[in-house]
Length: 406
Image 1 (spheres, rainbow, N blue to C red):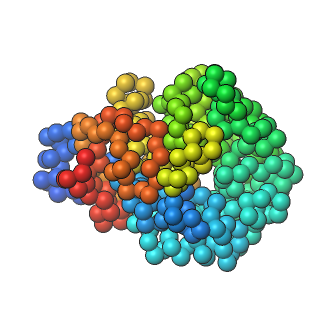
Image 2 (image 1 turned 135 degrees about the vertical axis):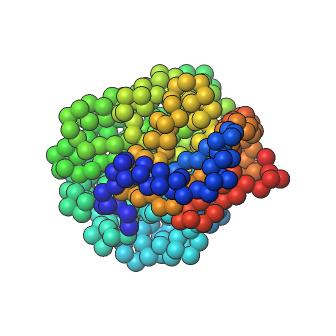
Image 3 (image 1 turned 90 degrees about the vertical axis):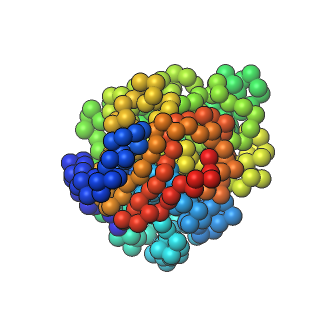
């Protein structure tokens, strides 16, 4: 397992430069003559591939196909599975389909607690050699004493705690952001404190225990402020946000399950704070939180649909179109957020991994065209620039654009 390996930005960039030097002359000529660009294999530290236990939503094979189409050659899969990888035996059931069907590097998380219930610590030591990090993603660890104990053990193991930060006592049945849209349309809202409250608790614990701490799917402006201050105090903390939080807010909501995710799309001021956090380095990386569900589970409207959207196949085109082409981010900074930073933080080396893109090509996002089994995306119908033509992992082509597909 990669976690624990010291990987530096310089090592990764030198590796990628070496790969590019070895391209044949004809290929180099093609790159220089048009809108084509080669990028290092992207890395997403937060995806859900649903196998074992929920293969009707996604499988290791379909998830890794979708990732490859999006230019990703490494993903870290969350443990809300059946069985939950909370023991050595259960982890082996998770590793088997990864080894049999993964097209790219699929690196599983181990659960922090048994069944992700927050009541009893999982078999951390037994799983540590074969997991990328530990998380109870999908659920927040409610007990401060339990989180302290988990951080102490993970610190000794040299493992990152990646936290889904959510205070259940503040949810009150909410399912979208507690903002203008919720009030105007009669929906129950999720307050921002349910996210930033646990983050404030956890950065204090991380400072006291020396644990490497990573905050999943940051969405609120207060969360950004807390993480910024913690970094200034020397806490070993990083965080991620998602493409949807950077390009949308609750003013974009529609009465459709494809706009329902957890945490929810928040206020315009929250999106502005996330972009500021990207600019000043508070936000370290962008992860999709790719979370496929069946069509039926996402057809019940905002209130009753399952939480979660898919994102691996749309992340780069959406971010390139909405942030790079508009001058909010440089292309180099986007690659840092999608590749260099997640690999350095989680110790994931770059092999012979790259993707080829036509940056001028435009496409309309159509879920019917996805390789993922999930179809729920808030970006449906968007016209975006950037089409992946080929992805190579370990020197093998794992995705090649079908000329007949959009």
